[in-house]
Image (cartoon, rainbow, N blue to C red; front, side, top):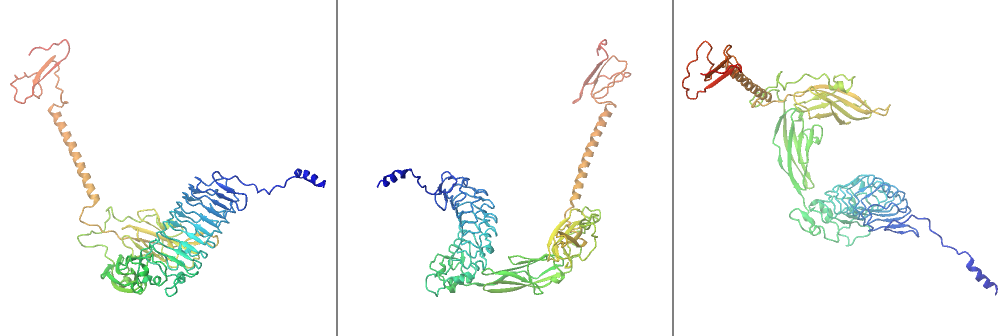
Length: 626
């Protein structure tokens, strides 16, 4: 019994066992709440008035919430070394810029919220390093561009992608098609006008696709939509069915949307915008028989056209239908024509032949096709001989002759062949320049299969009046090129080079294919108005004549005044040698000589000027009386 009191006395003296201390942690940022007592660590800073990401973050945190602040940018160092971060929220800030590699260390991140900011584009390096990301929320930004490689690092893990409420007119559909694990895809409230066929065919796990409130007039069939329930099935969507939302689009309800009309729906929010007969009606209330198309009808085609060889020709074809038909052209030889070095096909149905050849003549066929059928029309083209260099009519003149300012200058000694390489003589090795007119010429060269690894061809040329070389880079599969920026009445030196990869050195090298010299036709000038140099020279001669005449008149006047005053400057009278004092009265004539008495002054006539001139030769001679 005595042992018990002794134990009770010694018990307070024993060291008390302390609870386990957490590892040393970084201080919590000001205005934030930090959970560091137990794992996982979290830093919560919502609505804290932050202007930037706090620098004193605990780098071991698994959750970081920075929503509802005023952060304008995410820098590279802001989230460095946070390798254990799982959830990051930057919603509803003012973020305009995300530095490339800003999330590079967040390899464990599962969810990234960037909604409610001011991002205008997303590049390839801004999401680099997010190899385990599953939820990416980018809604309510100002995104107008999404790079094709922006989602490369998270393409295999992403399950939820929200791009709604942005300004996207185009999307990298090929990149979106690689999101094999995505379940929810939000594309609503954007500016998408079209969706390519098969854009969603590889998204086998997609459960919800929202394309509400875009500019879609039609939705092409896609294998993905085969999982949508049909009308014949019971109402209600099974778990494996796809939820598709596409209301708020200006749908054009024709035969192209019959497949969509046959699908079962539980809502009736979609409506038709066109054609006028169905505008404003609910999509699901329109009968399937009313989704019709109109076959194309050719409304306009070019009349029979005749052009001389070497000139351009434009063939036109217009068609109407529902949907709008696509116009294609077939040559007289039965080939489908498209954009090439000699022809251009425009979406409005115009086919332009840049330089016609004698073999281009014949019947061209215009084919207008849509989902309801096709219509054809024939356009005849006749290609005549090239026009003569001179036209004998009243609206054109002969080509300029020698001495004319517009006459052809002799070929320049510094030709393009000498500039290409000193070893390349200006001789033809297969390069031909044909069908050259006043401003265009067609360059052709043979196949260069003996040269391995050709990357492209390079054309270099200059005119006789200009030593500056002009370069053109041509694809490797081309054998001709049309030059359209030439000046009329010039001699050109031209060389073609093959650009290839040298297998011995691994560097890019060039090898000359050949050179040629040709001249463009002189431009014909109208005869109605004088030539500009003639007008300028005439005005200069007339002005010079006026100046010379004025100088001659001035000299004549001076000579006359000099003669009137007896060879002395005007205002100076002749001096009399022995006379001490002379006074004379004149009316503009010379005074009397010493030998002849002065005539008596007569009464002055009207408008007669009387002048008294007195001169004294010294202070001792006083003038005498009259």
